[in-house]
Length: 142
Image (cartoon, one colour):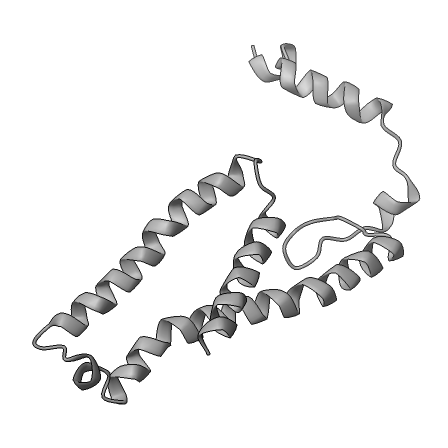
């Protein structure tokens, strides 16, 4: 006896019952998968909101990224401008400085991400606060 025809499994039965009670709307009939395979259709209001948020957030994120890269590359550029001779570094002391810099970046990122994910501080406040602190320090130094 064919088991598949005589006893449909419970998943197929539930899916069949769900499909029978479900009526397709006009939006579902017109939707076609996009390049990623999703059938989501966004309202014009939602598209406008996302575009507005992106136009506000992306320049700030870009500036943060550029400042981070400038900070990371500053020590390499300082070496080209006689940084070792000015500070009297000998041997591999410059390499130790670079290692301490990048190890500091790595070690500080872990508790920073843990703090932001704990919901004690919002990432927007945490990151903007550090950016403002860095700007104040740079203004005072130069």
